[in-house]
Length: 156
Image (cartoon, rainbow, N blue to C red; front, side, top):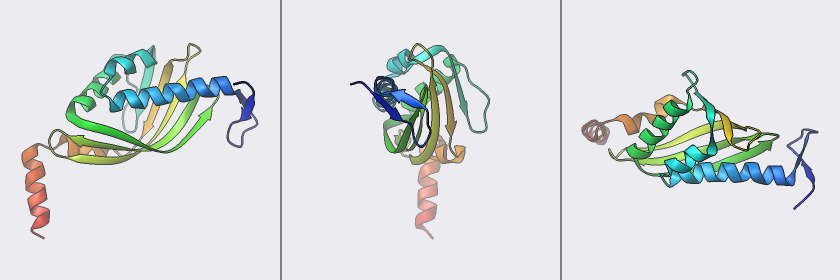
């Protein structure tokens, strides 16, 4: 496929090939997390990737991969409900709802906005994540805490 298209309402143009490559990286990243494939996440990230999230400092690759591993190991399944994805030259912005069920019985449906930039080599070089950190709490509760909370709500 060849040609050019306009990105959003911007006058900047991106080749269809570039757009397809960016969309492919996006699809592979979220599919890898859904499938617990941390090795694929590692392959998609630059060695010097920077990951930032709300109320936190920049994380280097190793620390960010530990967070991904924790999330995959804490949950039994994960699904991204993509609400919107906009490509720009060198990356994309995506809004999604992250659905996950925890091994502790808790579940989340967390709304996230993520900005991902790719390096010249086509690998992810920067990730900025925007979400309410309180929404992850159900995955942090112990099964006992979740059961007590559930019972307390039933008694009202």
